[in-house]
Image 1 (cartoon, rainbow, N blue to C red):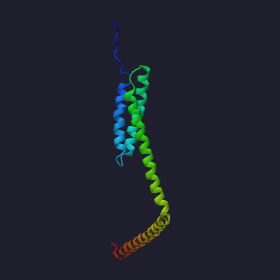
Image 2 (tube, rainbow, N blue to C red; image 1 turned 90 degrees about the vertical axis):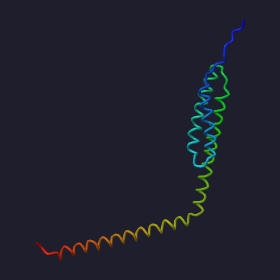
Image 3 (cartoon, rainbow, N blue to C red; image 1 turned 30 degrees about the vertical axis):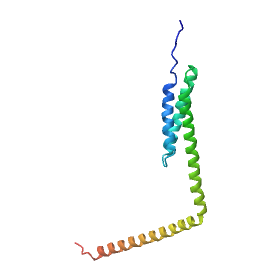
Image 4 (cartoon, rainbow, N blue to C red; image 1 turned 180 degrees about the vertical axis):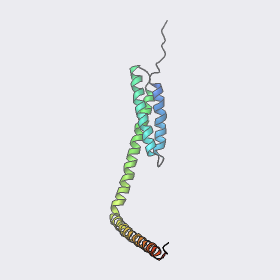
Length: 141
């Protein structure tokens, strides 16, 4: 009679968690404005996948789910990082190509801020002058 031992489930819980997080990370990676969420889920999938893979290898259990979660987490994280670098590079290149216009706008802001400050100072002086005039014309009791 043979001794049948069922296969070990070591690392399968972590593998399932890694797989679910990896799938969510991949889906979120392709949705604009969800890059940080995708990175978070991707890193968690990598961590859980690595832990699950380690546990499964130690117990000689199947490693399919932990590997899948690990791979999906890595793919999603790398995709989001590359996508963010492309977007940041595009905005940086656009800003550098319009540097003269940006400098002119900043200079204009400084000039207008100075004018607004002068106007406020004049208004305050007029209000103080009117208040002084009212105090001197008021009858003393």
